[in-house]
Amino acid sequence: MKLEKILVLDDESSVRAVLSDLLGELNYSVLAVPSIAQARLILKEDTFDLIISDVHLKDGNGLEYLQEIKQMYPTMRLMVMTGFGTLDSAVEALRLGVFDYLVKPVDVSRLSVALGRLEEVRKLEAENLYLRQEITPHNSQSVDWGQCLAMLRVKELIDKIAVTSATVLIQGESGTGKEVVAKALHDGSLRSAKPFIRVNCAAITATLLESEFFGHEKGAFTGAVQRREGRFELAHTGTLLLDEISEIPPDLQVKLLRVLQEREFERVGGNKTISVDVRVLATTNRNLLQEVRAGRFREDLYYRLNVVPIEIPPLRERGEDLIRLAEYFGHQFARKHGKKIKALQHEVLMRIKAYAWPGNVRELQNAMERAVILCSEEGSLRPEDFAAVGVTGASATVQDEVGIVTIRKVEQAMILKALERCGNNRTHAAELLGISLRTLRNKINEYRAEGLTVV
Image (cartoon, rainbow, N blue to C red; front, side, top):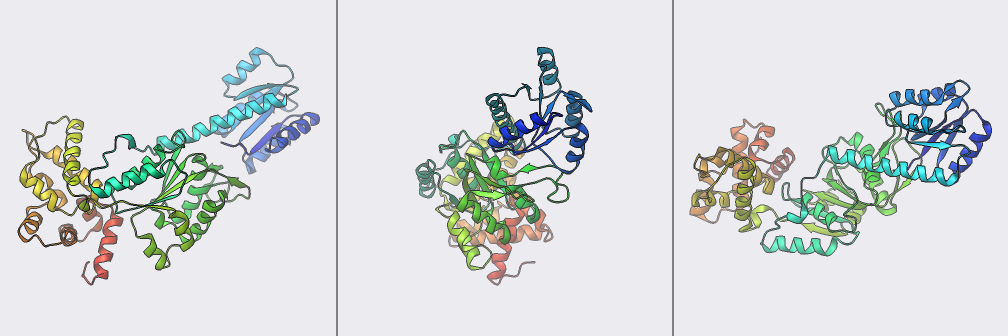
C-alpha cells in the first residue's frame, strides 16, 4: 500500500533538508519539523502514513515520543534514526513497535528498501483486514455447475473469458449464484493470486458509498478521523466485484465511469490522483438495459460494464439440475448436522419440482438445511419438512393435475400466500420464502404493473 505523506522529525536543518530531498526524489510528500512540540501541533490537524524521527532531540527523547505516538495513533508507522547507532538501541526501538532503524547519514538505497518493505507490509495488512471482515465462502474449483444446457454454456463462457482482463456484467435473479460466477472468473484469471475484493452497493447508504469505493482523507466528513483506503485501492492488481451495481446513485455513476475509463480517481476530501490496475466485475438482479431506458442508469456506464455479459438462468429453468442440487445440499447439510438421510421420496421430489423457487439456489439451500434439521429420526425428509418455504401439496397438485399452469403463476401464488400468512409484513414474508426483501419488493412491483392488487 503506497505511502503518501511522511513526517520527518530532526533538530538539524541539514538533515531535514537532505531527507526532504531524498524522499521527494522517491515521489513521497514530505513535511520536516525540528521539534516534538511542532510535531504535536501538526498531528492535531493532519495525518501521516509514516514518521521518521531522530532519537536525540533538543526538546525530548525521540523513542519516548514515538511511544506516545503509538498510543495515540495505533495505525501510524514509525522509523527512528540516529548518528549513534548501537545494537542495544536498535533492539529497544524495535521492541517499542518501531518498524525500522536507520543510522545517520541515511543511505538512499537503505531508505528506499525500508520504505518498500513497509509498503508491502501495509498492503498485506489491508488485504488481511478486508478478508477477516468479508470472507468469500465459495471455492470455484469445486462448484457443481450442473448439467443443463444453459449452465454448461455459462461454464464454457467463464472458461473463455476468465484469462482475460475484460470487464464482465453478470445478470440474474437474486440467489442464482452470481457471486460464485464472479469468484470463478477471478480464480481462473492471471490475477488469481491477487486480491478479490467485493463491495455490496445495495448494503451501503448512498452517502457512504463513494468513500467505500475510493476511500477518504482525514476530516473529509464527520467521523473521518484518519485516512482510509477504498475498495479500488485494496483491489489494486486484483479483481473488484461491484455487487448489485444498479443500486449506485447517479452522481456516483459518473465517477465510476471515469475510473473504468481512466483507471484513476481521488479520495473523498483529497486532491491527489490515484492510479489503479483493477479488473472490474459487476452483478445485478435487474435488467440493466431497462434501467437505462427508464433513466435510472447511465447508458455510457452500462456499455462500459457490459463488455462481456453473462446471464445466469433461474433455478426453475435448470431442469433436472434442481433435483441434483437438492440432493447435493441434503447430503451436505446431513454431514454438517451429523445426520443420516434417506433418498428423497417421490412426493417430496414432486413438490420440489412444482415449486417455483423465487429465491433460486439460495432458497433451495436454506430449504434443504431446514428439512434436514427437521427430518424424522430414521432420516426421511417428509413433505411437511418443506412447508415453511411454501413447498406445499397444493402447489404440487396444481402442477401435476392441470399441467398448464405457468411457473410464474405458481411463484405468484406462493408470494401472495406468504404475504397473507405474515399479515402483509414484507420482511417476515421474505424470510418465510427464503428470499431477500429487495427481491420480494421487485416481484410485488411487477405484479402491480400487471394490474394485480397487492398490499
